[in-house]
Image 1 (tube, rainbow, N blue to C red):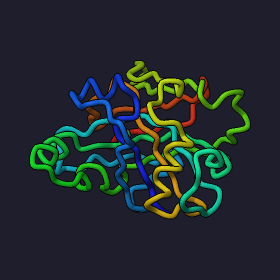
Image 2: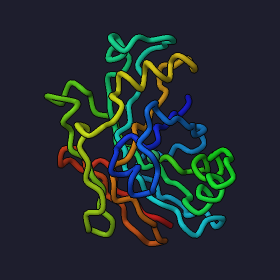
Image 3: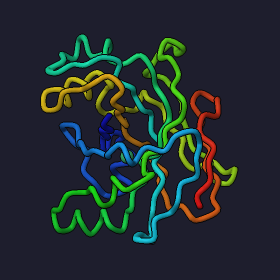
Image 4: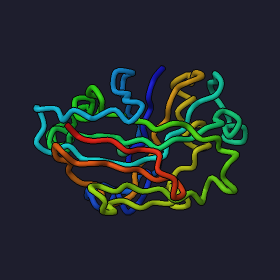
Length: 203
Ligand code: MG
């Protein structure tokens, strides 16, 4: 199983980090050791003083495919979940300055909490899904999939030109604006269309 993530897929988030709005999807990956399930606590790594939360919609790939056309890409995922793309922003900033890869900032253990999956058929329109994140009971991020720069189909088509997608692979599809730092003791709650799917603590 691999985790593929899309950076800068909501214009307002790209702007808040002073990044240009991309013209093709920005891709990075996390290893399977990043996956955190069942609302287990996230252990704050001591190598970063600025770990950020990024709430994201996550797709689960339902069958193997490569060179998938955008037209048929919708057949390659049946379920969606909420995930948090934890990012060591201090490390990422240093690496961005030097033009180095982001893995140390993005791929560390536990950096990808993912909720239970929900059938995409539950949603009347997958491009009108509200999702958000509360920290200690306060709303910090609120997004809607209508604001995606690159659609789920476009992402699957794009990624599968380079990397074969396999059943069970996860795709983090990008975060809306409002990212910020987490601290030990914080409680994170993630909502998908009002339903609480994520609820865990930073330890
Ligand atoms: Mg992200």
